[in-house]
Structures are given as C-alpha cells and as structure tokens.
Image 1 (tube, rainbow, N blue to C red):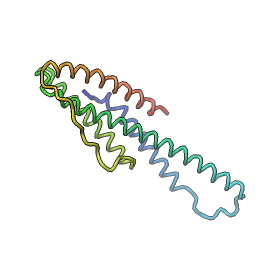
Image 2: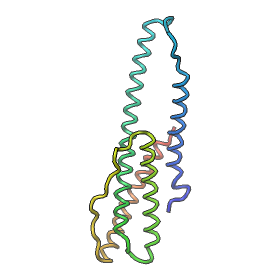
Image 3: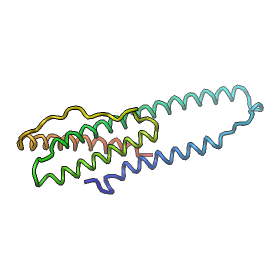
Image 4: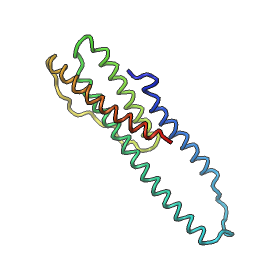
Length: 168
C-alpha cells in the first residue's frame, strides 16, 4: 500500500525538477540580450564554447533521465498487467492485489505525466501485450509469488535510483 512515505521520494524528485526548471527560467529571463561590443572577442568565443559544452552535457543528462523514466514506466506497465492476471487469486488476497494494482497504476500515471511535462513522452502510450493465462488457483498462487518477488526487486531498484536522483 502506497502511503505518504512511499510517495515522498517521487514527490521530492518532481519538486526538485520543478524548482530547477523555475530557477533556469529565471536565469533565462535575466540573460543580457543587448550588444556586447565592449567585450573582447576571445572572451566571447570562450563563453560560446563553454555554452556548447554545458548544452551537450545537459542534453546527455536529459537523454539519460528520459531513458530512466521510460524504463520505469515500462516496468510499472508490465507489472500492472501481470497483477491483473492474478485476479481471483484468493478471497483473502484480493483486496491486497486490488490495492497494489491501483498503486502501480497511480505510480505509472505519475511517471507518464512527468514525461509529458518534460516533453519526453512517446507519442502513444504503450499497449498491453498478451499476458499469461493462469486458469487454476494453483497457477495463480505460484504466479502471484513470482510476480510479487520480482515486483519487490524492481521496486527496490526503483527506490535506489530515485534516492540517487534526489541527492543534491
């Protein structure tokens, strides 16, 4: 179940991205646009080179972050489908599986919305492929165990990545 503690790392990353965007916007607004004829040519060329270098690093960082967000969304989307195959696993586990499905769907939506805000979302949302059929109760229980185990590992990795991204 995703509570405030589970959502805080993602909110922290989103807040940091928003603050960075706001700070960059203010810097862009403050940039001088008037003539710079009194500045030495060598200084201007050096500054232009540094701008190109910083832009290149910024582009590389954005590409890596975009790839990270896409992989995160794809993984959540996959687990969302796998969890749906577990419907009817048992009456005792049904509420937990339903809540987990909702939490994963909310998390995937949050990631997708962030990609849209950054302008890095693919043109189309992914479509779900065929999910395995688990006709018997035994198969659903075994499938549930495997899905839960792999989902836990995936979420631990996601947590480490998001914690790393949240560091200053």
